[in-house]
Image (tube, rainbow, N blue to C red; front, side):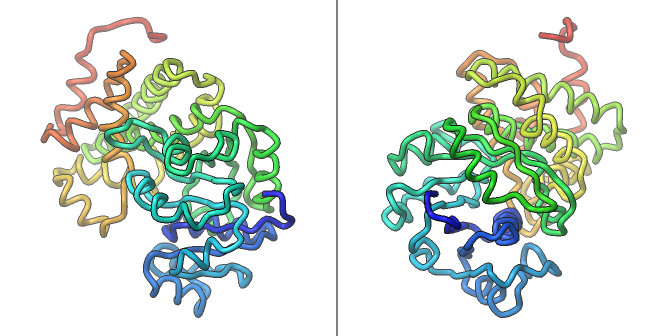
Length: 338
């Protein structure tokens, strides 16, 4: 990211990728947005709108879109990865030969990879061979529709090299988007991945007709189990008390714009996971797959994550959401800070 202004390639034209590309363009950066489907790229170029994911939002004229990854990555000094977490490895393997060796990578994906149990930054480093300080993570209350509508929000940029986080911070600061910096990549990624799972549980509770007490309980105890996993993996507990932890958790658990919350609500109302996926038109609720990887990661490190366990059982083992409350409430009593 040594050139000024930075030249960004945003790979992935879903709602969050498109919204972040808009943020970068509004901040004055040169941005090319890659879309998997040519018709999406053409719509952005011709109509200044992504009709599939952010209908009605006008995109800046300086934002360029293409369906050709070679054009998107040509000369890019920073590569923003905005594809679903479970497809990141496959996509990045196809793109790595097109990326400058000294490019900065910025991950927007929030998940843990199935099978390897790796965080997204670990996947990026493994696939590309770049140094740890070439990878940054963006997380926080990142509901794309609100950011695209230029509603005020803050976020966190994490990189092990603080100077690089600051450089990216300067590149994406706008009048409506305020980024903060940290060096705790582990905590930032775990907060972003685990909150999707807790949001599924909150959605299930809402679908079952439970109110604010139940959801407040799930949010708070969900944060506690995320913090336990974070401690086991070396995260800073203050990260999980901040924007990348509590901030993202609250927004994702309570907002009707959250895909994970909405997916959970459908499960709570009696739909199967397949029916809920069809009703969301195939848009990815990251927590559905990540809950299994996070559960395995917790088991590997001897960390108790009962909400994650229940969500996994509902999404993958046919467990009835109506039994969720009894399963959680019926656990052995203990002090809160355990």
